[in-house]
Image (tube, rainbow, N blue to C red; front, side, top):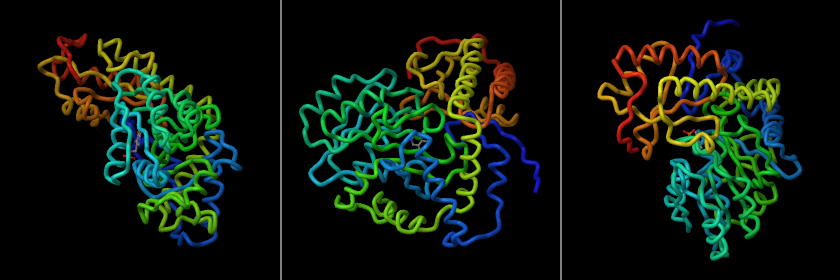
Length: 381
Ligand SMILES: *Cc1c(COP(=O)(O)O)cnc(C)c1O
């Protein structure tokens, strides 16, 4: 089977550009997911997902869910808080704000540590809070805040969590399978991701990777959701090798192919490629005189949040539409960084795509008479 699919370069923060082989892997004969033939793809997939973060399958397991990445945030937070315990969330961006929102929706007790979105968080404040509150069940932090591109110090915060007898959950949705992560060295009890990001698969499949021992203990924790409960899904997998309810069948076939391609490319090689893409992004920004929200020393190397120019002719939508016409997708910022746009080094692309992108982008600036180098006056987020 060979279909000519137009190639698009997605510089938005997921879904990512996929290879044609991953796209084509979805075209399979119809199958009932309760067939043995289908179950055979789940077990090795769960093991591969644990292997990506260097977990030993004696200690760690991967539990799959049908949904976008946010379903994992919902599930870990509501399933892993025991009665009488509090959640502690380090809030320094839109994705950690989402965790705070989820906990509030469930009405769960929460200690929120608000930190600036454009700086590394203060570890002393986190430790003080842990020292004063001996009823913290888990500490939650986003690894890579996709809204700004900030890379949080998860290893240090995970260590603090353990020092005060809490376990550590981190949202690695926008770093998993892109930069190397090691659950042991990084002090991670639970992490998560979604197939449309790091592994470069299709949207609709998400996974939580975590300590079996804690999941098994959570059997006795209050159940707050029928569908979104970690233990219930885990137990079903252990018994049957299946998802509790209908899985995203074709997305799973794509994920299987994507994982095959991930291991083929290699962890270190893939991370080098992402860094190479980001270098090409930075080079183009510097050439045009664009400024970013974060200093490069605290950036993840996967997302650049770029400040809008103070130019009367600047109109993000027009620039977006121009680039889109030529096959490049750029993305606006998040609420607290609303006067920014983002360029992400995700997906099956390489530095040559970025070189072509900058030519198109520069043509767009010229077409809409935006001054080069870019003008900044009193920039305010
Ligand atoms: C993409 C992303 C998610 C999930 O977002 P969905 O739109 O639900 O897929 C969660 N956390 C982070 C850090 C992300 O980048």
